[in-house]
Amino acid sequence: VFAAQRAVELAGGSAGSAAMSGAAALKAALSELFVAAYEAEQPPDLSRLKRSGMSHLLQWLFDLNFLRIALSAGAGPGGAAYEALRGLLSKAESAAFSDPVDRLLYQEVLKSSVNSHVQGTKVLLGPFFLHNPLYGFLSQGHASSPG
Image (cartoon, rainbow, N blue to C red):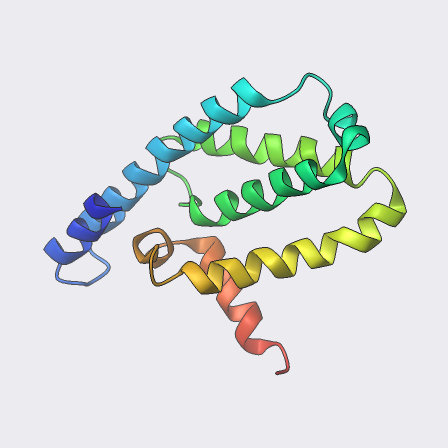
C-alpha cells in the first residue's frame, strides 16, 4: 500500500501513468499471492464445504468479492492471477447459490455487505480504489440509489 501511495505522491496526486502503473503492479502482485493462498486452502469439492457449514463458504464469497473489487485494474500485468481469483469466486458462488433459497437469502445481502465494507475501507485502501474501474462503477451505483 505504501508503494502505491508513494507513486501517487510522486505523480503529484494526479492520474499520472506512474501512479497507475505502481498501483497496477501492486494489485498484480497481491492477486498472485491471494490466488496461491486460496488454491492451497481450497477444498477439492466446494459443495462439501457448504454441507459442513454455510458460514465458511459465505466468508469465502465475501472475501473474494472484496478482492475482486479492490484488485481490479483493468487490463495489465497479473491479469491471469486476477482472472484466477474471479474463477475461484465463480466456483464458490455456484456452490453456495446452487439452491435457489440460498441464492435468495444470501446473494443481495452479501453484495450489500461487500459494498458497505468497501465504503468503510476506502480511506485506508485509497491507492487500490484511485484507478479502479469496478470501484468507480460501484460508487456511481451507490450515489444514484435513492437514500
